[in-house]
Length: 142
Image 1 (cartoon, rainbow, N blue to C red):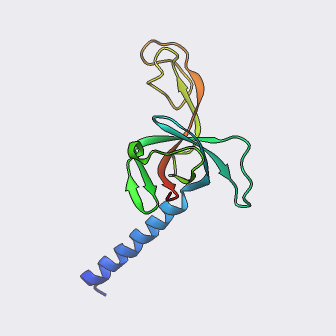
Image 2: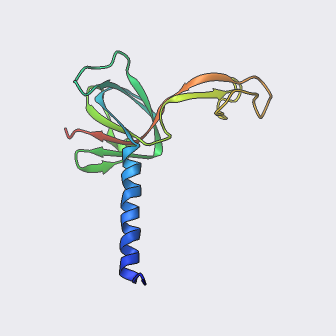
Image 3: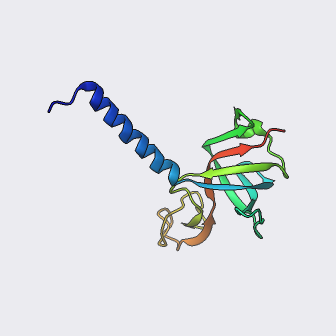
């Protein structure tokens, strides 16, 4: 049986949609209230599905790829002017979760995924917490 061009494109489309569903399923979503903001991070006091707030707020790193949406309008992180007390939803993509990274005290700009020696000066690397990277920050319209 010969597969026509239309059937081939349809099967590729179905595969593409199922791949997108897998990507969406691997996202982590955090809802809560903004408790702090700085140049490259936001801190959110998250709430669970039952509405109970967490005891310790979560930090989320903001990168050049982070999408910020206020209401229905996409804005840049700098122009979003996020304020403490605002309600927010933070989406973290698969692989960008919080964790631990290893850094040299003299060269913190060169983090590593595992313990070892600094590639620049050979000092022993120390562990530090790595915040999750926000793929998207959704803010309620004010």
